[in-house]
Image (cartoon, helix red, strand yellow):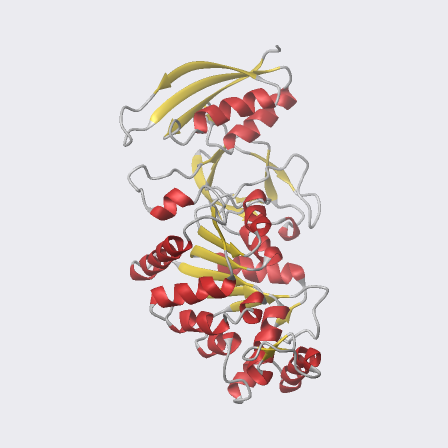
Length: 408
């Protein structure tokens, strides 16, 4: 082996969380070797553990790669080096070798101080504002020429989320796996308890990411009950959900199928287009609510209660509705702004919007993903939203049960 060496250390509940063996696996898997110089294991569940590990790699490139992977698990070099900054050479791209963020709490050392990175989310870079003593997580599209961007891994600390060893609730126990065989009643009961706790203690906002299936399955009335009960603070969706919600209010159908009789109505396939056209003629959804032309449904409830929402458009949208944001970067910016202060997120029957939102959320946000398709629930976790609790079930069943438990 070569002489490229770095000593790292781990602190916290690194044994019961399996962080310690995961770090060792990462070192070996990426072509380096390790020597455990010191390890102290806590005697009780309350006690933290400590490990000091020497990592040796055959090249500086491999060592840098190893450090990048183990830092995501909370391992940090013993030396406290300052971050290295490089100016962006143009708008819309990072300098070569930029530090790519995770969704975990991150600190950077600059000017002899440790700065907490603001608005942290995955797949971004970090811009430092030296005069203000701040560090900001920035998306690639937000970069401007001359911005001081962190390059490399020196001076960056990632704080992994620690499971509270004293908390043994059902939510915590079941959040590690995805299975259609989970006890849905108990999970929904725990989700309702979490929501009540968020509201009672003022812990933050509850974000909902919802797809058209809420309307197709007849779940919108239950969702409106949850809105009216005060458990919805922000909603992300697309043009499709809004169009079918309005179609249901105006024609009693979704995709032309009667929501009461379950039958396809004559020329029902035109209803969503006619609904969009009608709203466009009025100048928008808000105008339709103000004028009394739209008096029920999800969008009506959101507007009436002044709850912010983002309808992020796509290339397949009909219309679209005036409130749909067709500029994807603008939609992302609006969503990211509204993610601030969110402490719990519920994603139902919408793969693309769920994954997009997961990319914007810090790992500390309690996230619930509900879908009838197991693949969708697991894909969210595979894309980096590891904190997500997966529930495989029908949207209507979930929302009806949840509304009942919330008293909506």
